[in-house]
Length: 117
Image (cartoon, rainbow, N blue to C red):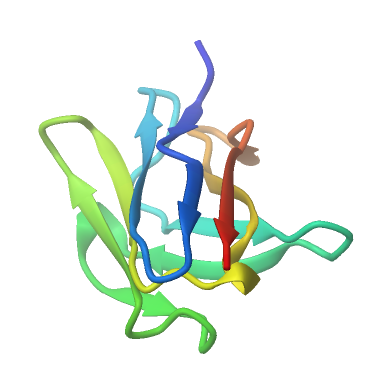
């Protein structure tokens, strides 16, 4: 069983919205932050947002603050990322990451978001 699985990516026009989901397996220690990163084409992976212990507290990169919202979905055991007012610069593969129970970090396989102008 994969520790984290992302979904929800797709292609949208500028100004549109998407909701990404990161489903957490029982292997993830939710007492640590869950974070979203993204990797634009040809660029380094960059931080997007984190959510705190058991869904408390959140922090965003300057580039997305006010447009993206990270939240905990207890019913689905997922950490969701609502993307709004999307811009072409938001085009990237989006990844979630969390701490494994025991030791080490785990990353999902990523989900592609493409924003066209």
